Length: 468
Ligand SMILES: Cc1cc2nc3c(=O)[nH]c(=O)nc-3n(C[C@H](O)[C@H](O)[C@H](O)COP(=O)(O)OP(=O)(O)OC[C@H]3O[C@@H](n4cnc5c(N)ncnc54)[C@H](O)[C@@H]3O)c2cc1C
Image 1 (cartoon, rainbow, N blue to C red):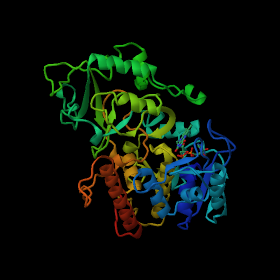
Image 2 (cartoon, rainbow, N blue to C red; image 1 turned 120 degrees about the vertical axis):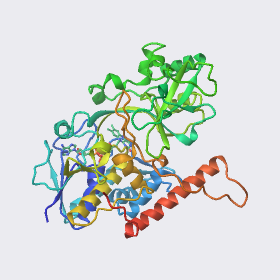
Image 3 (cartoon, helix red, strand yellow; image 1 turned 90 degrees about the vertical axis):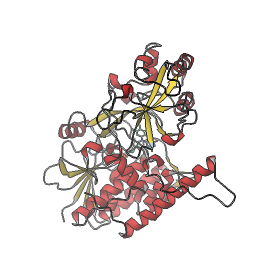
Image 4 (cartoon, helix red, strand yellow; image 1 turned 180 degrees about the vertical axis):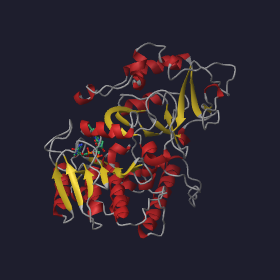
């Protein structure tokens, strides 16, 4: 049998190789380190953790990331097996001894009879005779390969910087203050004329907000990021604020064409707009709010915006060096490049974010490629599972917009906003109605229970979601 070629032995590539090899298919895994390295990797080890040693919460009942851990364990993930075997104490989080973790993955792959590891940089698109390839070269894909991918996919298809605006769960916005309206009620393509959530600011609130942005604690760029140019359209919001007190009011916070139905006679001094981010309409992103403010500062400052006092964030803002595809446009439901289906992508380059998410997408890419090679139907996980929800974000769940500024598809961690809402609210307890935190916890427990049940049915083949 011809091998499946996997480029990059990071979190995604290593997991993909394991999944393919365990289905009896030979794998050639191409890893450029230690021959050529990236600005952040320090070793030649496979699956090196480039920064923190945490896989975040391991609570599979009430967190989306913990659920992803649980699902990966059920899907025989090598990354989770190595993490569990090399765990270090970290409270409710799963943290690992990074060297032991990488060594365990390296040993498992090297011992596998179906896996060959080649230490070489792939410097161009793979040769035509490689008929099934998984590209898992990560956020710091080597520049020559990144250029080749860009040539093959198009100028606007591969980004070298993310420009992440915070995303808010819609059900945490206070609609006694905020309202739905598009600027000048314009419907635009596919819109209704009332597509944005609007949060009004008075002059005093705007001034205080600008002061807070300028004074807020920021994260600095790494040396290797400072040399990568980013576009004027992606300026951090605090940099715009520093350019002049009125800059934001004439930019992303402009109040023109918007009327607050609660106070129709009073013009808002400035308006923060949030735009629908996913088809499910559970997530809304803050337009123009890409930022280098520290996460704690973002939560503190953005909750001063009227209507967002109790906002919960599915994602906080950021701006990093990051190579990623405009996947919803380019990839099919099984992560193949539509224009060249022999090429499949996995890991952070597809637009997920985080060690675990990258490995999970590697797991799926490996399984999809193996099923294809064996002539089987490629069955994608149901959207109610963490794997299916994350895959949905990458391959189609996100709503692209035509607004100016950074590309609207941006990397994302797994979160409950990506899951289809429950059809029924969890039943009340014998003691009465659940409220506040108890209600939110019951909802999360119902989502995770549904996910694991559906995953098990998917694994046994009782639930089939064949890719179109
Ligand atoms: C600076 C930085 C810090 C981060 N910190 C965290 C964190 O703390 N927690 C977290 O959850 N996530 C973090 N991330 C995000 C992300 O989770 C990790 O980058 C993760 O490793 C991505 O997994 P991956 O498999 O997609 O890519 P990687 O793990 O980077 O693997 C890609 C592999 O491909 C190889 N490669 C690249 N180009 C080629 C080529 N042309 N030929 C052959 N091999 C090639 C690389 O050497 C690398 O081994 C961070 C990212 C960056 C850039």
